[in-house]
Amino acid sequence: MTNYVFHTPETAPEAARSILAGAQQKLRFVPNLYAGLANAPAVLEAYIALSGYFDKTSLTLMPQV
Image (cartoon, rainbow, N blue to C red; front, side, top):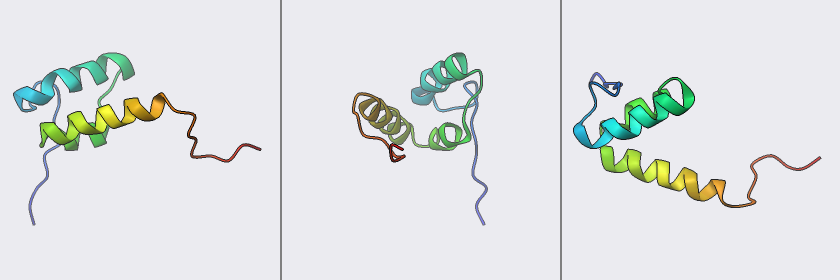
């Protein structure tokens, strides 16, 4: 079984460091999803971009009551 590394802004690959640092500054912690995705910086960047696109829509996951 392979050990999966969850990164901090200090241990992440160079391309993911600024993203993790920004998340830590904004949220006051690094979510585990971000820390795991930092192993593949392009995937982390894509996830953050996709999240931003969803923030710009009226799409909701919860039905309006």
